[in-house]
Image 1 (cartoon, rainbow, N blue to C red):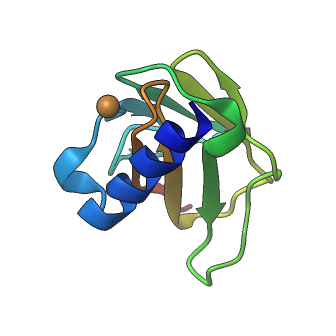
Image 2 (cartoon, protein in one colour):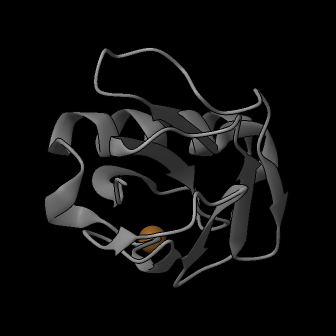
Image 3 (cartoon, rainbow, N blue to C red):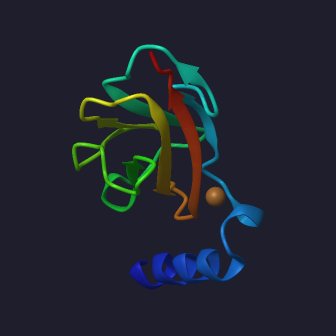
Length: 117
Ligand SMILES: [Cu+2]
């Protein structure tokens, strides 16, 4: 069984992600590409399939590439949530890696903007 999982991971890696994605990002909060006036306290990602918590993660970085998330994502079913530090106005990038319960690995990124005064 373990060998099957490893082979699947290897294939997913060789395919380069997007083409054979299975746990697609369904929607996110803040919305992908959106501008929000109020700094969000967390980013929540909802996927089209349930995730394996041990192999799914998300990072949020500021325009200088510094982490602004609080470290460890909470994964529950098909959602992944990560708390944020206090965000200043600017553009932030969310990078996620997901392993769906069918052992397919996907990843992606998007930005959202915190509106300025
Ligand atoms: Cu799949």
